[in-house]
Length: 178
Image (cartoon, rainbow, N blue to C red; front, side, top):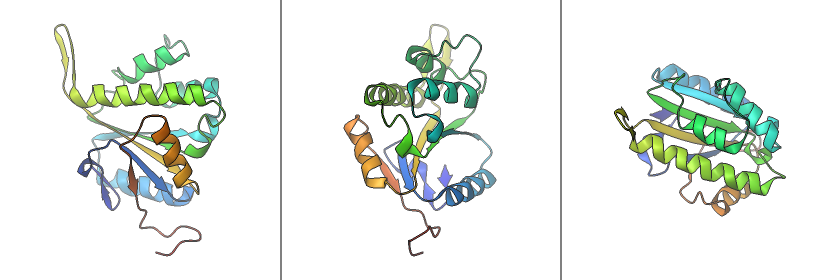
């Protein structure tokens, strides 16, 4: 799968980080969407996820979780590992303004990253539930930040996401050279 000027499947990691302004991110998403049709892209707004409850509401809304979603981390884990109602061939989760995502709730952030790591592993190896078999499905995550790449990358590494690929934006961003 290609992200503009970067092939996501070319790395061992399903976690990527990009530092750019919001306009550049929107341009890259538009370009990406014009290049592929088999991928469902879900964008989570990190500014709307500064607390545990806000994060659960944002995920429920953006992923269109079923009515049985009970707004806790166990339910988030269950729904992210199901996504039957979406049924995509591939998933790309983008968390923009990542530097603001659960910024004042380190325990919730730690639990979230564990859920995300398990989710990606489960999707990528496939799942077998009795007679039902779900084949491997690519699931990638891009963390976006506007000006805090190093601290955001360190935050992820501290939480257990050690395999993180930095996407170098080839678009001009404010204060950078092309």
